[in-house]
Length: 217
Image 1 (cartoon, rainbow, N blue to C red):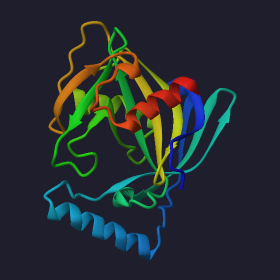
Image 2 (image 1 turned 90 degrees about the vertical axis):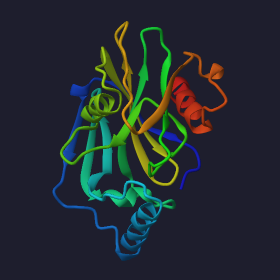
Image 3 (image 1 turned 180 degrees about the vertical axis):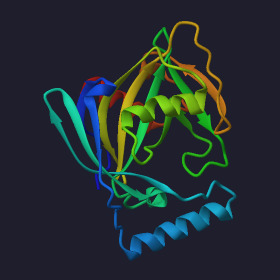
Image 4 (image 1 turned 120 degrees about the vertical axis):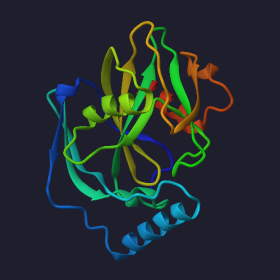
């Protein structure tokens, strides 16, 4: 399993350039992984974190074709995303969000959340819903988490991160004067400088690494 993020495919693409091809056949993780997912859900319940299970997206394959990105996706059990050794190529959307002046929107995740609890994250992120294009996920998560509409969104990269996660990364640019309202998954937010080298100490190394990776690809 790679220890650092790596870019699988590099855009930019428009939402129309991203094609999601879904199969109806769900991912069979095997009995050992299913038991581990059960245990992960039980551990969340024990600390009063969200413990709902459900269905999410898994990346089966991808390819670029004449400026387009084609993704082969299948349904998978959401709880498999929680496994620390292998998240089974679970696919999430990450919508990095910048204001009119280029600053980055950062939010501190609430202590009761199942992942990155109490830590700072960039923009909006979440699992790709079954039947959804990851390009649609970006705008949906931005609306759900920050109650704001982007002026424009570019789909930037398909990135593999440690422990078997795949991130579909986009950048949303907000119109001048746009106001954000955080949801209950965030207990604080801030606008970080346009230059990641000037970010505050609370910026996790993974966040700096992601920004640097995209900037120098």
